[in-house]
Image 1 (cartoon, helix red, strand yellow):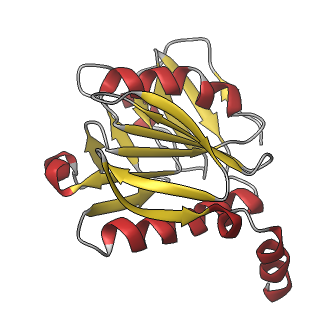
Image 2: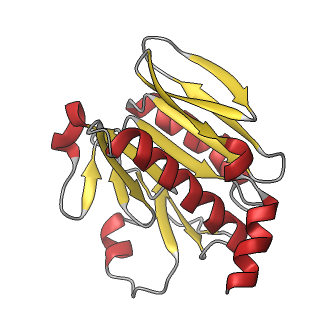
Length: 194
């Protein structure tokens, strides 16, 4: 998946006037990033993670899970992103609008692709830390691991394989079976169904 980056600063209003072409647009640090639709494995991992997070968080009344394309705008900045998945807890529900989220979600999830890995591990990590995101998961579909970055009261970084604990603040509220999320057996099975 290739990403185009424009060197000329562009306003978000200019982006809104562009035709809907199926690409995902993000505006970070005065630069426009355009990423085409993800590949099949990326979509399958996203779907499985979303299902797990909905079961653990949304179905238990803890908040709401969103998936791309849906916009997050960080107040006080010109930065706008469309992560693969994110979660907004009930205590932050007021940031959810009709067309976008205006503020920092509790959890942001990005699934790496060759063209976005540098940005996801660099400027987005910095952006989410600065703007009040509580947790940032970087999902690596090649290594079958998830890097979890925690910001705020208990900052830290951990890498998980096998089982991924899901936390709201310090409370562990469930776990995601990463063997299932990354299962290539399920990928093959789903391909045969198509």
